[in-house]
Length: 322
Image 1 (cartoon, rainbow, N blue to C red):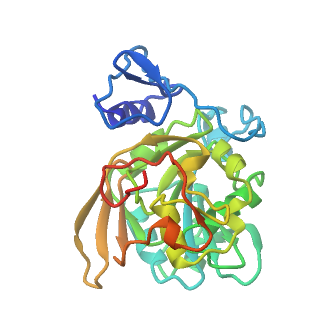
Image 2 (cartoon, rainbow, N blue to C red):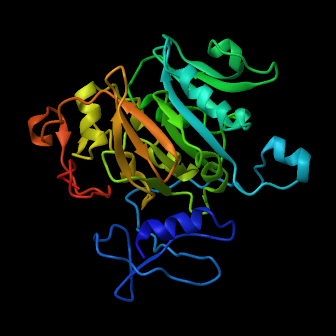
C-alpha cells in the first residue's frame, strides 16, 4: 500500500489521530523515498513520526473552539475546516467556482473565506452575501467571509491573510482547504472536505509538486509560517516557490512549514475553449484551470533565490530539486 492510501483512509476515518509511515518495518520520519510503503493497521490509526522543526511553534488551544452551526445542532464539533479561496479584485472566475459548489449541494457557505488581493487597503473579515460578491442567483441568507489584502501577491496573499486574522472568529479553524478562484469542484469534494483530519496541527495534504499551491493544512502551519508570505513576489518567483526550487527572500514553499502527506495525484484532462489547461487533483476532488507557461529557471539563476533540501513530494517530473 502506498502512503496516499493511508492518507485517504485517515482522512475518511474520524478515529484517526495522526500519521506514521513504515519502510521495511522501521519507523521513518518524513520525507521518505518513493518506494512502496507498508500500511500500519490497527483501529483506524496511521501514525506519523513527527520531524523536529527548526522553529518554536506557538501553542494554540483549539480544544474548546466550536463551529457555531454545529453547536446549535449537537453541542459538539470535531474538526472545523474552512475553505479558503485565494482570489483578487475583479476576478472573472469566481462565478464559475460558486456555481460548481452550488451544483454539488455544498451548503457550508459560512465556512468559505474569499481573500481578495489588490484591494488597495486591508479589510477585516466580513460576512458578505454571495449575490453581492458574484453575479449569480443565490438564496438571501447565503453569505461567505471576505477579506481584503492590499496587494495581489499571486497564489500567496491568502496565506498572509490567514496569519493576520487567525484568531478572528470568522477565520479560526482546526484546518484550511486552500484553493484559487480558477478552480471548480468535482463530486467527491464535499465528502473529502467533511472528513479531512487535522489532529496533527502541522499536517499538510498535497499532490506531487508543482501542485498549483492547492493544499489542506492544519492551523499550526499558519502559526509556523507567520508573516513570511507578506513579502511581495513576482510571477516567476512565485513559480520557483510552487515548484519547490528554493525560497525567495525568505518566502518558502508551504511544504517547508509542516508534515507533508501525499494526497492523490495531479492529472492533465485536456484544454478548455479559452486555452487554459485542465488539471484534476483527484484526491481533493478539485479541477484547476491554468495558463501553461514556461518552466521556472533554476534557483541559482534567479536573484534572491536560495536552494534548499525541501520536503515536497515529487514524481520525478517537473520538480527536479525535490
